[in-house]
Image 1 (tube, helix red, strand yellow):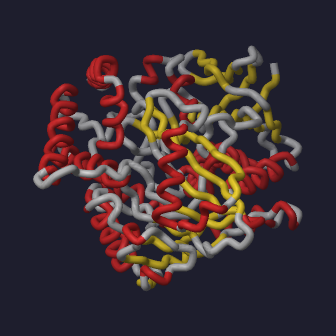
Image 2: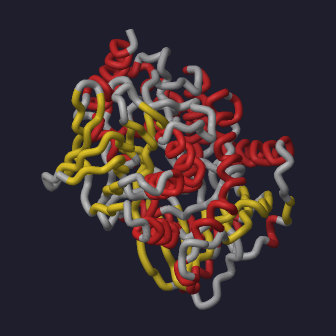
Amino acid sequence: MDTYDIVVAGNGALGLATARALTLLDARLRIAVVGPQGRPAGASPAAGAMLGCYGEVTAPLLRTAPGRAKHAKGVLAARLWPSWLEQLNGELPEAARVHVRPGTIVFSNAKSGTIEDENFIAIQQAVKDEDEPHELLDPNQVPGLNPAEDCRPKHALFLPREGSVDASRLLRALSLSLEQSPKVSVVDGAVKALDVQGGRVTGVRLEDGRALAAAQVVLAMGVGTQAVLDELPELARRIPRIFSGGGTSLLLQVPKPALQHVVRTPNRAFACGLHGLPREGGQLYFGATNILMARPMLHTTPADMYFLLECVLEQIDQDLCAAQLVAWQAGNRPVTVDTCPLIGPTSVEGLWLLTGTYRDGLFLSPLLGQHLARRMCGQGGLVAEDFLPERKPISLYTLKEARAEALKHYLAMGWEHGIRLPKVGWHRAFPRFYQQMLDSLYDALGEEEFVLPPELLAIVDSNRAAMVPFFRNYYAEVRRAWA
């Protein structure tokens, strides 16, 4: 059996950033980074890698203390990126270095109802309140936006300190940095279970039967973390459950890209908003859908492909119909039952979690990787520990607020999918239909202490017969765990 000081389970952005931070803190540490080479179903490879702190702000986010805590971590991460990348690039040859493509333009249009307006206003207010550089633009003069007439943008806001990186290039750079360390082993495999003796972790077992011994283990496996936790049911029921936010993204090749910056809408319709951004070599990245599921999706679906293409061609650039298709990508964001991350130690001595970051894992990776590494080495962390893994699910909404917010998202989905109301009066019937559906969902769940966030309703609605009992039983287990 191979023996290490630390096993980092997960080779996405968070796992790699944590392993690198550990090597910088103590070059003597023997570290194994475990993850399948192709990263199937992972969030990082399919990500647009927007460095979006303010672009991700929503109206509900800053109304609650947990929401403000998440935003505060984003602010810290944004400040850290330049120096972190400079240090990483200093370890790499010129051809392997990673650079931020600066600038994000947030635009809003009328394709998804009032929620887009509310979130755009929330972004504007946040940048004003926190003195973040910004500039209002003429929405009809945004480089790269050439939408259909009925999709013309109403507002546009330029955020010069936000932007994007190439996710694949970042993963390669982090991997190369780790491979240069003589004490780091990169293991092609997947962790299946933990070895725990006497209340402390002693190592991990892989799906292929191999075992690795270690006194400390970091679970940074994204959506794969839940299956490992389920092998320890007493621990698992004390940690908010992780679900999958499946997303589809698209790469196109064009002779001369018109996009100069990230262009994106505010978050809407249960997703991170439509976005596009330039990549090297004349490629353009577009994303992304968000389908909440109980299990990860391995491949994109024709429905998601059709919807994303339609959004890109109608709302961003009609002329992209002549572009060449390079690739479809599918990834799975780790979404906890309360949509808040899992960061820090557990009651199993030596076991740490770093997952549940939803859409922000890659963006937060320099900050959270260093924070967790410092904590594991007995030093002070870099952020407040607001989201320790073992906790009751956090309720970000009252039941009334959740029903109202969910209705806005469902209406946005309808408008975004091009619903057509056949006659006068249906504009009133349309919201009533969704309201009745939502009321019946929340009534069936029968839960007021732990209010299911609107984002997770799709899981319940997809299979009520199975998922209503599942969630009712889950919350009963949570109560027993914290009795």
